[in-house]
Image (cartoon, rainbow over all chains, first blue to last red; front, side, top):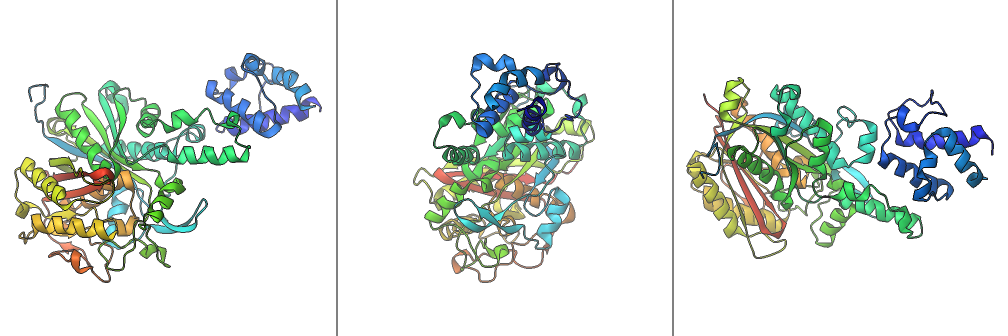
Length: 81
Length: 415
């Protein structure tokens, strides 16, 4: 799966959680928390959606790997494959 | 009562915010009750099919971000709407108030059933793997959630909690708020009752199993208190929150005063989980009258709890006849025929529906009762056009499961 396809899947999940936010100008290299109003409960929502939609389990130790879109794609890419 | 700096301060209502199945503010609610407008509709209830219910249609996004609505609960959303509306209606600006000195006290019948049922439903979609159980479950289901969501939304840092008192809770939220003002614990109160009950099939199913779920092919007639052909309760959601202040504070700022809390009482039957007890209801009304230092003849309106169950209606009517039977001045009405039983919100909504009587001098009718149960026949039962009458004092009954009774007396404020 290519970068854009994985990116879209992640953006789709974030769109459902950060429901009030405009996601069209997200910078893939900047921490999501620094550009969106996201807190720890929201990150748990992202983890839950990954499990529900794609059966991807993210162990607690790996949560920091979801910090930016880019790090999400690097971490999740092999799991989507 | 020397516990405090404000012994037995007089407490008044200076703002009203509400959502009911037939209106989203006090004026529209009053108009709906005066014009016999039903708010009952048919809804699809999980596992049960189409049932009569009372659902509100206020705009959830008016005072709440979508994300916070998604994170929170329907009861929280109803509470946030009512709290904003009440503050707006009071003319107070939150920015100018000391948020540490505001108390939020909301009566609830129950809280958490909606979220728990939804989670269990989800669990079954995932082969009972509890790894799919939401991290939102606990914050959504702790009993203080509706009040806590208001605190978070408005940035109010004073005490914010709920009071569980079954269907007597709407009155008791207000009574508790008044007491906190009298004790000097807070300077401003947001108090009332809320219900999200239509979101849970369990409440419908529980009443059905009890033989107490109201139905009719015309859903607007599914709830028929005092009618010999009634067949039970129609579950409703809703909320009513009042701004309460000590009279001296309200007068100082020139507030519009809707009424003064004149008396109240709360007691318990201690006899049955669900069946009411006439004797304790009589005692509760008499004790409230004594606290208000008035006689039955002084009361212009008694608003019945009257849910539309045979035993509930008949017991209450017997109790009301025992207390008010000799009073020619007292008129009787009830509200649930219009909106169903809004559980924890019922007492607060029903008070709100009658408060305008102090200014428009009308007493709203019950939803027209076609065939009055002879056991519920009462002198001065308002069943038809509103009664034109000067109104100075109203008494609001709200009773609940496990035998809790609450009576609240509000009088017209005269300078």
